[in-house]
Length: 251
Image 1: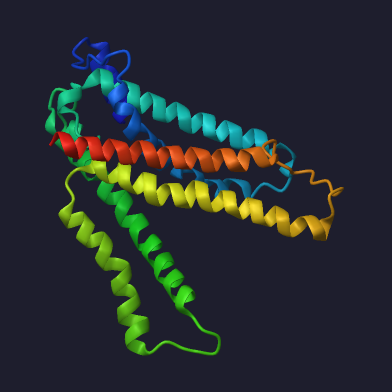
Image 2: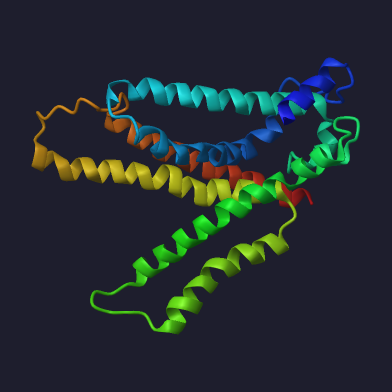
């Protein structure tokens, strides 16, 4: 809906965006946003699991990522040409609620404005329950049980209070996305998977033998790619940290 509305406005010649060809000042924050956007990988298990014949799973996953990239590109480019970059909200859906020239139907304007609320309302309980269970597993001891207060009060509170406090205290979504996407996101999406692959290979090599052939092996099976991912993660952290420091210094 947002892509079509932006295209209609651009097609009418009323688009306000006049973006430069390139802006190097936005590169540091781009790293954090790229890490954050890579959360589309969370949908991969639900795509791969139902496939019984895994011979073509690589092509299917590639097609999936190309489709995701296409939507990201469409959403981004229509946004920068449709709206004035100096007035563009970090929460993109809010641009359609403030501008009647783009969307003059009140019901749809409220729907787009509340769309992030709908998505968070469905995702947050699932993520919160998962995090609470992870807390329980982390502090669990064999043969022991948690008291009722710890199980029903303490674990839910340490799960719910931090995100609620951050939500009330944070207004700059660009900085928030940059921080969470770079620091937490880099650890979850780059560092941990890289170390899992590295140590899993070391564990399986004496068990399976070096001559074992995996017909589902990745084209990125060389150890170089593990270290490349770790180097990329480090560069993301450095660029975003530098961007945050320089931005705060200017203020």
